[in-house]
Amino acid sequence: MVYVIGAGLAGCEAAYAAASRGERVILYEQKPLKMSPAHKKEDFAELVCSNSFKAARTASAAGLLKAEMRLLGSLCLECADECAVDAGGALAVDRDLFSAAVTKRIKEHPLIEVRHEEIKAVPDREDPVIIATGPLTDGSLYEDIERLTGGALHFHDAAAPIVTAESVDMERAFFAARYGRGGDDYINCPFSKEEYERFHEALVNAESAPLHDFESSKRDDFKVYEGCMPIEVLAKRGADAARYGAMKPVGITDPKTGHRPWAVVQLRRENREGSLYNIVGFQTNLRFGEQKRVFSMIPGLENAEFVRYGVMHRNSFINSPKVLSSDLSLRGRPNLFFAGQITGTEGYMESAAGGIAAGINAVSAERLSLPRETMMGALLSYISDDSVKDFQPMGANMGMLPPLETHIRGKQERYQALADRSLAALRKYLEDRQKN
Image (tube, rainbow, N blue to C red; front, side, top):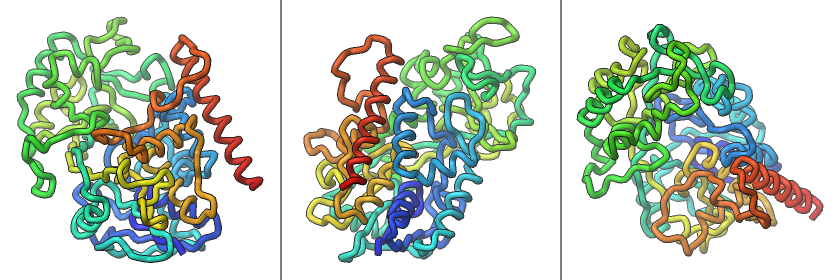
């Protein structure tokens, strides 16, 4: 028997990986009995921030990670393929359909028993236990994890607003994908220099929402994850910071002028029907009224209908390099595993990948030792390397991989070669493992 605590992406992958290998699983999920500040739905694998799983092409860190996960039988990617929405070169999903699909697969699996129950302490069992409670772990369970791991760390994360498609003024905005990848998958809102400067001025002076008590609002305690930087925090770094970040106009031509805009805001399809769009890169902690006021200055969103405003929440993670082995077990307790964002692997797919690894290791006599050349192997190595100083959450990136024996100058060619090497190494490892 394997016990999995938490039915987010990592927990669902862990339960599915273990059950797919013939082991009975009990999956604990506190929803709907208790909801975290960021979760709104009862279904499993709820996406609380973006609906994008990032780039699909293999010659990218995100695409390579997904390719490796597919070789290991990822449940989340099977469901993502069923629920995909057009998003250029990215894999994005209808978040409600995706969560429903994952929930259905988990509940219908004959070897998985779901128990809706709040777990208040780390179970002390001889059977394998996988903690996949995510970065919003709180209460007595959080305190128990702190006790076991010698103290947890944290940062602050944010989500972007969502607007209705029909409220976007398409006389100002236009459809296009950056560099023409994927056809007309994004709505683009172009800025002139003067419009951008007015918007930037309003953004940096807008009022932020106070953090909740549990999030600790002390300013010297306030850290944000660079990958989900609130747009107002980014804007305060300089007048052009947003233009080189979320609002970069590179690869976009305004068909009304024939020129590249000074800056651009992109909207990505949120659901399959195309009735909802999220504002890409506009994670925020502004007060709701301020979001309405400031974001309505975006060309084309003057009369936008906001169905969800952006929110910020505190994310917690353990100091994994000091306490976890490369198989994701707690050092000194080989049958207690941690998986997902609580380990400091930042991102949806990174979280899910950790769940796959923990689920396999929980039921295997020979635990996974993935090649360092693979993206999954590199991620697991990073969070279990006790030489890492000032540990911070890390998402998949090509810089984590060992360099090629022969340097390739072109970036895309080099990334493709790294991806080819990774997938070849993983296939050989899995074939050798199956023989043994």
